[in-house]
Image 1 (cartoon, rainbow, N blue to C red):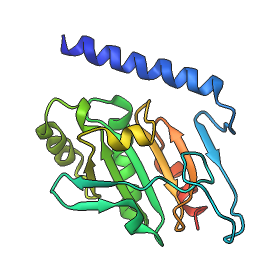
Image 2 (image 1 turned 135 degrees about the vertical axis):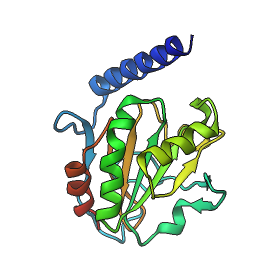
Image 3 (image 1 turned 180 degrees about the vertical axis):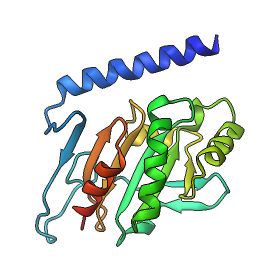
Length: 187
């Protein structure tokens, strides 16, 4: 029964990713659906939203260890948000690269676990130990941030510049080289 539910979830995510890929009107590059934007005038007001060039929606979550984290507290830093789950094969594939990226850059990496899709929080702790993750793991136990960021396929990542503006997003796994490439283009 558990395998059937996971299979249905994976197929649903793949169907959504395919639909979104072919119906997205924004720039698509490489084998991944991505969006990029060049820097514009700092004086220009930006609206909050999920598109490249918009200010990333603020949120407050707890880490798995109970610390409070607020996205806006990282203004002035370059941030990578990564939405993931323990049962997600592409997330598992991406995690070693994400950990290496965190260690090799001065990026703030916030791993946001889709906790409502997990069987229990122990699975998340085991995953963290298995992959030896040292970046903050945030627990989205009520799906509030997932809903705000309209997370459909997993993993989904956002690169946010020091001004809080989304400069890049990807639906699906990103390898180390891709992470470093996009990160190095952030202000």
